[in-house]
Image (cartoon, rainbow, N blue to C red; front, top):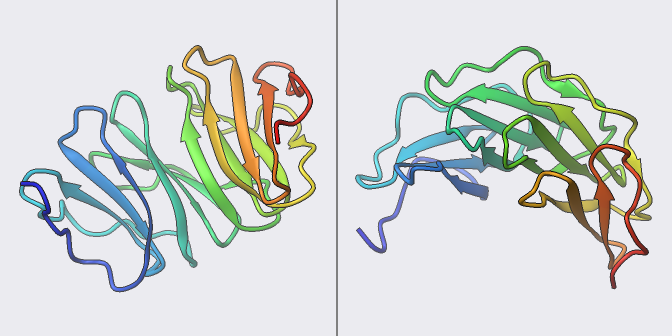
Length: 179
């Protein structure tokens, strides 16, 4: 129903995402949990997902709806099984500061993360390995990241008042920063 309030977090909710089929909502909170909700009834599905020891700033659902990626204040990126709620392996480590944004590529093969360490990182969604070196060029925290619909580019937005567009394969900036 319109206006449904999903209640269960005990602190700020920083990020929400729908599953691709629209049946579930995923939320990340300052209460150090990720929750999965039934989008129709508003009921929480199973227990909250826990694993980071800090605030969850970002959540995203894979295009096939089977995985969740989260980014947190502790600088880690975590993959989760969206069905069982179990964490998948150890957190992806590479950022040296808060992870503000995470996203799956439209084909589900890659993950991108943006951090207060001024970098963008690309990860293999299956092996969980970093793909190449961090993308560097912003002079301040990276707050938002997104893949292009054709999987070939990444856009990143930063506190430095710019948007950068990157080539996914080479990691090179495609053009001068957009202001």
